[in-house]
Image (tube, rainbow, N blue to C red):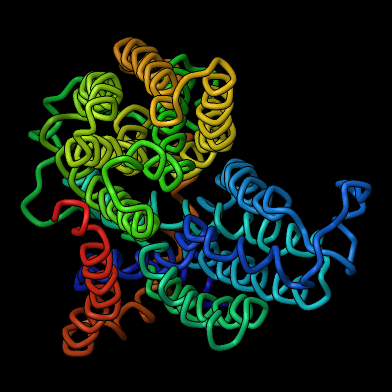
Length: 517
């Protein structure tokens, strides 16, 4: 089994259908995407004991207490820790992933994410907050990072003709994981309690991600889609003809420009996501019955998740035709206009318009995540794109703190100045618009990488040589999934990932449509 995880054992032959790889990637991303749905756990985790901690119980004491309940702010740190370790793991293990291959990284992600949730279950049972932070935060965060980047370089190599579409299909799953996992989590909590829910979901994700990891194959060196002429396609001067080593990527201005582009785009979008439900309740309070505003706000959150998913596949695939630089220019220019228009819609109580504005904003937030791997492949080549992408995701770690803190503290400042509650986010939207203006400028400055940073032909051959020397052994395994068996597995794999996504979309539409009625 362990021998079959090696990269040289998963090289596919010419008969392998590349459309087998996206559903494998989706199984992993749909699993780790549940991190966006952790808000369903916070209320349950703050009432396990049934007694509030007094003001004399310090933050440090609450980490270890078993006699009183944690505060909401205590347990929410789990999400922040997980996002930080996602970025750190992606940066630290990105280069290892390129050498070890996506299958080994996918299995490791399954063990860390699934195992981390099981440790969290133990933390709930023992009422030890540090165990929850360790399980879902640190260990689970490492699983998130490994799982997030595991399919990127593989899909880009399988779909050199549609890089945006390929990465969009996989990363779409990260946006959809919460849409599927939250209803499941609610059902499990109501029947088994929050502690056992963490264990059950950890087990489910461990199995699903392992199956997905074993669906990974890598193309043979020099493989290209039938009928695709890379020379004819590379008319865009932004698409590099060389490969930059991961150890040199950070030495280029392009890396830091794209780091800033991702950080600013994510900071703006995640700021809105972090306060979506309470923000909607405050802005739309005078337009709806107080008895149903909570349910309507939940529907608003569901629609935002749906927009996040749609944006990942729509914008990433569109970038194959528009180009990555133009796609990001649209994100920042259109996004700026929409962020400035949102306060106007809120002040005038055009709630449906406000919702539509934020939905479009969230499509570009998700689209930014899905398009950046293809952007990196265009600029730095495909040889080390997974490792470079991993390092770039440290921008997400910072944005995950900056965006929510910015919009929250600005709101508190506005309230302290006597601004009405339904207008307290107006300044926040304007500041977020300024972030996008900064992103537009950074994206404008992105140029092709100087050829001096590219790997020489000898350096490239040295890295590819080991893989070439082992391809004969790999074909024995790949031949098993060819021909008739592959024809059965391919539609089945897409059904397995397609059905829960469809159900999640239906659920989101049912909850969100009430806003427009």
